[in-house]
Length: 340
Ligand code: HEM
Image (cartoon, rainbow, N blue to C red; front, side, top):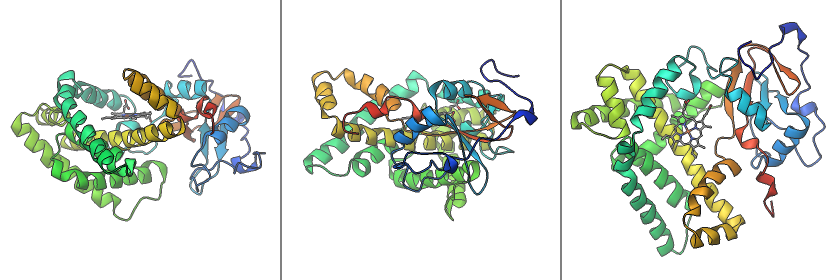
């Protein structure tokens, strides 16, 4: 057994649990599905029922069964047991995206990313991010309001990640398109998501663009995170493929997550205006608010894994080779909001 936290069992011992659609869900909740058809847009009631009644839930999909794990302790244990819950859901690993790579490559590439996020590299663009945030907000206020996702969350997120990699501001719109397409391509490879007809081509274009950007950053001796990754490529620590795919991963990983968190900020303020009043009175509480929001209404709802051996979780045996989705957003607390 490769973990202290999970129990590995002999293969023959496993009896498969009923599917999600065979379970006695309350009348107002459609059975939880692998691909949301709209009934799970606000999944917290589903999660609460799952934690109580089916903490390991097996759902059917045309490609394969998918096993959902919803209890905090079980999600935490699985995230800490990478030998049993492998991130390598596609083999051979098609892209150098950290979330689908196990040790030892994961540790090596993770170190490269961690080294690039130096205080110096972050300080370089902090003022710029603040100025961009003020500019978008001032415009919204001057217009008497607007769409906070389109006019604040997306531009702020793109310009921040763009600054991190020191991408030219005039290319942000193109980057947004490529980033969405790359996310779609990644979902198609790693999660059997439908993708788009152009996502692979767009991803290759993004990689080519990032390569050219790194050539420029290297010539400039640039100190941004993109500049660090470029230097590691030119010094031979990373291959060209690794360097450009790492840049793309940082872009994609950092863009949607922060856009959604910013959007959720406004949603939460609109539901609980007293929180906004409190932050106005005590601006330092904004930091606590952001931390709590990441837990309360998190932007990563599912993390994909594949089991390398039979493993028991919450009394259910998940077989070797099973596709698993950990639900880090399923933790208790979300439904305690008044009015939800
Ligand atoms: C609200 C913002 C964010 C949230 C909630 C978030 C959440 C997560 C989660 C849950 C994972 C682990 C996924 C898994 O284990 O399968 C992850 C991985 C990662 N994220 Fe984020 N993220 C956010 C923003 C960012 C930003 C801004 C960046 C970079 C600019 C970033 C870079 C990464 C990297 C490099 C990894 C891979 C780490 C590793 O595998 O060791 N993330 N993120």
